[in-house]
Length: 101
Image 1 (cartoon, rainbow, N blue to C red):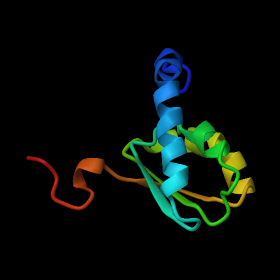
Image 2 (image 1 turned 45 degrees about the vertical axis):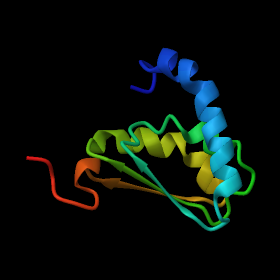
Image 3 (image 1 turned 180 degrees about the vertical axis):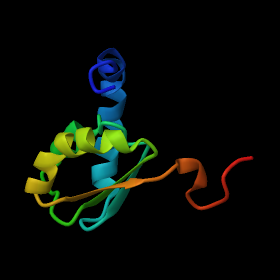
């Protein structure tokens, strides 16, 4: 997925850039950000653009455990910048409620 989505990621990059810029302005310094369906963590570069990562807690939720190694690789530099990165097994449809029937 990390390589097969290059065209998609390029197409949405301007929008993601604007959204992450807004996020950084509104986010308190020691916040928790939950990435639902983190996959291979294609959003890692948008976190890397932020210079104040110390205290940021990133929690990646994904049902596919085989994506965790790719996500950790993509987020390695973030942890070196002071953010924490946790990747947990989960399905977003059941976060905060019952699974759909």
